[in-house]
Image 1 (cartoon, one colour):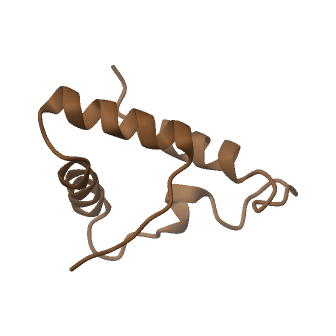
Image 2 (spheres, helix red, strand yellow; image 1 turned 180 degrees about the vertical axis):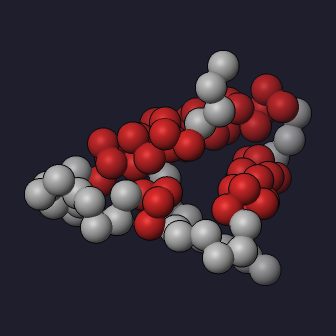
Image 3 (cartoon, helix red, strand yellow; image 1 turned 90 degrees about the horizontal axis):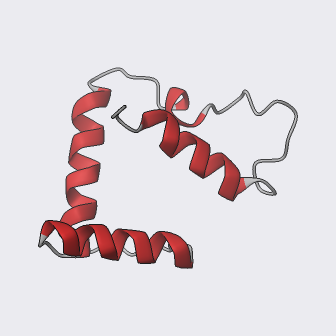
Amino acid sequence: MRTQIDLESEQHALVKRKAADLGISMAEYIRRLVERDLAQAGPGSDISAIFGIGDSGGSDIAEDRKQATAEAIAARAPRR
């Protein structure tokens, strides 16, 4: 099934570079990310835990979406 997503310019460049480093297409890289996330979430998981929905600290997520997205991704990233 075909799906279209919008990425910020910086996100696009980073995804493209990461996929190239792995020797795979951007589409395959994104599919792997989705698969890994779905496998970690498991059945019955609360999706709001990923993004902190409902606990925005009084800020407007529409205004702070880049920062909120970066924080959510960083929180879910494996520790090195």
